[in-house]
Image 1 (cartoon, helix red, strand yellow):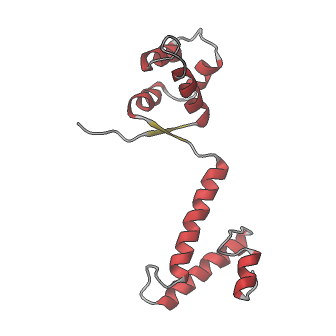
Image 2 (tube, one colour; image 1 turned 90 degrees about the vertical axis):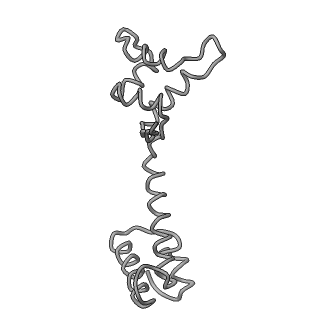
Image 3 (tube, helix red, strand yellow; image 1 turned 45 degrees about the vertical axis):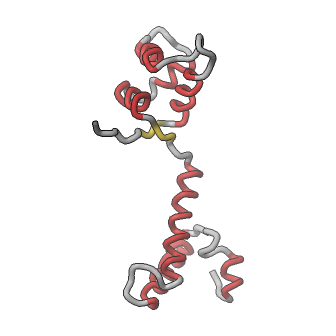
Length: 138
């Protein structure tokens, strides 16, 4: 038996599913109850409208295989910044993918230059405090 990958669903849908599943034994919704709620067009409740924001087959996969919540814009940005910090630190220390530490440092300088050009400040790469410690300018 193969395991299906979890689907990613919007936060609003995940919240609705979790709220429907909450409750005591008599009021908690099963997967079947949630599917019925989705398909009952006359149900105009907030939870029904929320779960209908994704296709039915996506909802079924989420209920059966599990799901991940979509990241907020802020969370996605912070995740990308963290990846950049890691890549920058690897190359800055000379432990990146290039053959020489000089090439790695040039790569890390390129990251910093691109961020400065775009006006993006990321701590540990091109923040004012980081540049003051290194004796350079941003």
